[in-house]
Image (cartoon, rainbow, N blue to C red; front, side, top):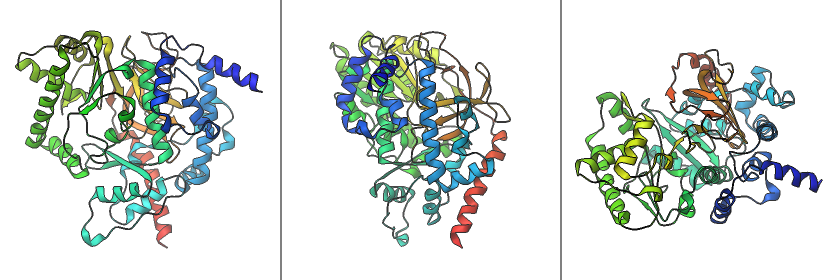
Length: 472
């Protein structure tokens, strides 16, 4: 038995090139507290922790991991999440139906809108209990006479041992995801491991983030990066203010209504750019390696400022840029990826191969990061099964455009079998590098929402029915 396990592990890690193991070993040392004891690993956790290079696992081996991991997690949600169990009953699907890899396609998916359909006030507690898989910890009730904010409500759950976070869009509704602490720590580790598998930036001497600190609010984009305090040396933040739920929605919805950003937002961006400029100048004449991480729109604005001031840098191979969060610089203007990378090389002197972008969302465990060779988005295909759906929400083949969906086996505290609102094209292999797993083409757009209405309404009615029954 032990010999067979060792042989399987050797095959899983056979494709890992030189250098990857050193980076992963350093990651494992720095993020040791994020990894549960090996004897307690679930099949989903094994699919994350076992491979050295997540992007070079043989496809058949990865699919075997997916089947085992996703069936395990599906069974957990089916048994311990009343809302999801009821949805499965409506579709006539049980864990016994998942026998082969292709059977995974019949797992009931839920729309990402589900996580926006939450009520306010006291009813929020019932909603989150329905979404959450397992038993919620006891939450100390808030004094409603004090008119608690949305962040106050979220903080009450987090004080009880959960990690509840949100992201926002122009709809004016937060997307809310509850995670138990094990899922949260595993998510952070997965982000770090994906970064290390694709680049050498863990060795950077200095890191600057142009994003909120994890302690400054409950935005997922900040919470998911809490591990970087442990992962990177000499970490600094260029933002010096708290991002509340109200501030997030105000920024998003005012920008949508007015066709631009509020004056307060522009002032904050100016201050952040000033801090980032001084940080770049500090290391310009040294031999130290640096990494700058932030949203593309901010780094584009930073480069605008640098050019207006006649400043250019030559960081070369000792510089790394990592972006994430979307490619809009205004409501009607997107930054072409290739143009952005060329401009980074012109203004900061950092080669295009050292510009990495992340496609991610609050609902998924991990990230989808680009490769340096061709800047295609590589999927974490050992624990996630990616899908592309047509207008009837049926899976289509490689090379066809459709709505992105995924089966995320590491999402243990909520059903991570989700239809997103994004239009993508998935390829079986990367055209630019030799990593064997599937990729998404670089240009990702928001999809029309009309075909989601029936699916979203079905889920809404199940949640509403649960609520009515609970009130009886």
